[in-house]
Amino acid sequence: MQKMDEWIKAFENRKIVAAQREEKSAAKKKLVEDQLYDHFGYQISASSTKAKDYLKEVAEKEKKAKKIQFQLMKQEKEKAQLKELLQREAEEEIK
Image (tube, rainbow, N blue to C red; front, side, top):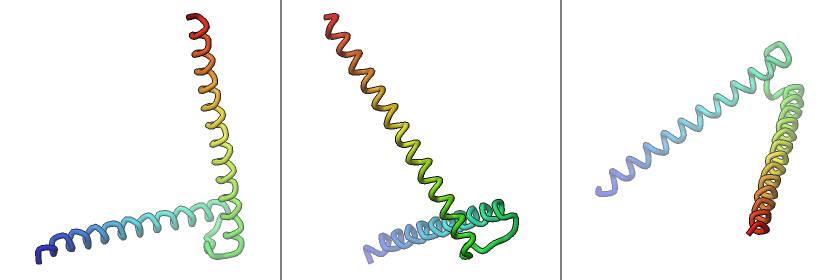
């Protein structure tokens, strides 16, 4: 009986997490449906071949864009580190 409160809280937490997961899934499904409607101009099932091919293309484009963005961020970070290193060397030469 002492652990009953803990079990009730744990159950309520699991219920909340499951509800959030379900809402997130429904939102993602709605977004995909809207995206398909915008592209094709009519309602199309997400499980159709045309839709799957289109969604695959979109996913690949997003993946490429993320990769390019990551590379640019990495280059900027390297430039900043190099600039900092050059400043340190210049300060050491002055001393």
